[in-house]
Image (cartoon, rainbow, N blue to C red; front, side):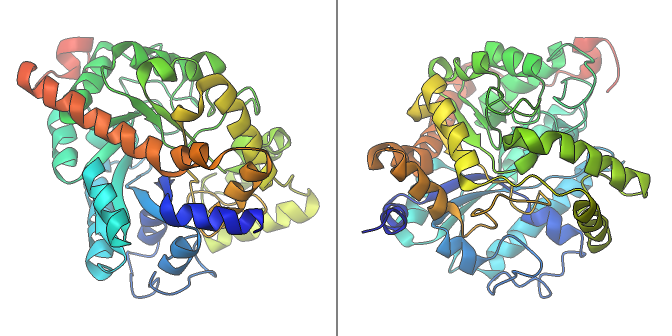
Length: 394
C-alpha cells in the first residue's frame, strides 16, 4: 500500500476537521447565488471548495468562516448574512452537510457519513463591542470567534496592525471570559502575540488557532511564536496549521508584500480575489515569479509545532477560498490526503495523525463545553460595556 493509499484509509476512519474555510465570503461576492455555485457539483473553475472535493479530501468536519471585512460599516448585519448563507447551504445539502453545535454532534455526523458543519466568526468587529451580540452569535450557532482580523478592534490588537491597547484591554478580557461562559472557542489566529499571551492568561478554557503556522519556521506576524506554542499543553488548546503560502514559506513573504502593493496601486483591496484582481496578480506573477510552497513546506511547520507543543495540540486549518494562492499538492479541499501521506513518509504514526485530523479538534470543543457548564452555574451573564471597563466608546 502506498503512503497516499494509507492516508486515504486513515481519513476514512479519522477524517479531517478543518478549522477555517471562507466559502461563505466567496459566495457573498456573487450575491449568494447558490445556484450559480452549486457545491453539489465540481466548482473547480471558481472555488477551492465543493462537496465532491470535500469527500475526495477526507473532510469530516468543517468550520465555515462567517467572516466579514473589518472596514465594513455594518459588520453585524453582514455577519448575520454570512450565517444565513451557511444555513442555506445546510438546507440545500442535508445528505452531505450536518449542522453541528457540539463535539457530540461532530461524532454523530462522522457515524452518519456526513460532514459536520460548524461556524466561526473571524474578527471581534463582528460583535461591535457588544456582549449581547456575542451571545446572539452563539445562539445562532457560532462556535468560535477570532478576536481580531487584520485590523485592531477597540479592545484587541491584531498581528498586522500597529499596537493599540497592548494586547487585550479590560473589555477584551471580559469578552474572553464571556466566551468561556458560553462555550465559544477563543480563536487566536490573526491576533498580535501580546493578545495571544493576554488571552491565555485570561481564559479558563482551551483556545484554538483556527489557521496559523509556526513563526520559527516562517517569520510572519500571523504565525505563532514558540513561547505561545509552549503554553498550549497547559491550556489544552489546538494550533491548526494553515496552508497559505505567504504564511508558510519565507520566500513568499516579501513577494506577497510587493504583490499586495501592486493591487493597492491599481485601486484594489489587497485581499481581493475577484477576476479583475486576479488578472493583475497573474500579470505581476509573470513579471516577478511567485515562490511556490509545497506539501513539504506545510509538513515542516507541523514537524516543528509537534516538537514544541506536542502532537495532542495540533490540527489543520487550510483557509481555502480565503487565499489567492495555495501550495502545490494542496490546491483545494481534495488535497488533505497528500499532506497526511507526506507525514506518514516522515515517520508520523497513524495514532498521532488521527489526533491531528480528528481527535484533537473534537476534544477541544468538548472541553470548552465542559468549562461552560461549570461557569454557567457560577458566573452570571456579563452586561459589561467597553465604556464601563475601558473608559471609552467602542
